[in-house]
Length: 305
Image (cartoon, rainbow, N blue to C red):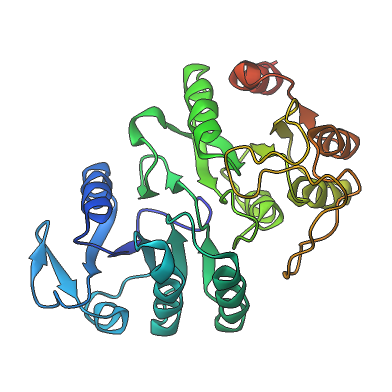
């Protein structure tokens, strides 16, 4: 088993004929993902990469029976693309696009909650079930099937952690990025809950970063009793307050954390600093790893001792 996706997942690509959509759709097809077509308004009825192109998601879903979509649409149209996918009845949307206006994401997230559609991202590398399916932009070659679940706010650190795990002889059950923006769809708690219920997953690696309170919220969830080992790394230990580091959500507030609409946008007593997140995760029972270079070896030692 895996979480959220697998070999049977049928994928549509939104923004299919664009440069990014074309490049990554080709990589997904080569990996073995069941890409069944895509949408590009005005190009319906044509074919691209040997697959049908549709004007709308409603047409595409009716013709293909897709169960997931991946969004490569420019920022100002991306929220509309997510909404169109959900309106058509898709169950899972992976939004790769970064730079979407925050208010657009807030609005579409509230709307998705009523539709029952799950959103990964935005600003995510996507999700991969090694050996089965890749819905996103991560390099498939570094992944191996296995029993470690991985969830991360950082795309680059996701790749680094996966590479180390694979080199240490540990494959992954599912690896996914939840996105680095201030407002996202699925969060750490959603993924931890899914990994808890996944019989293939033996342990979970959680990679957080500064800003917001997602790591503290995850710690609260773990504190209630989590049945599998959790290894955590938090990036940004030396980041100065007020300076944004990489992702839009990776910023330590100088005085208090901006509260954003959403079910789990709770305040952080530590103002988003790494030390507060590390302390919360450690107190909740997670094994906190101090160096990103030690992720793979630490997990290997603990699981194989």
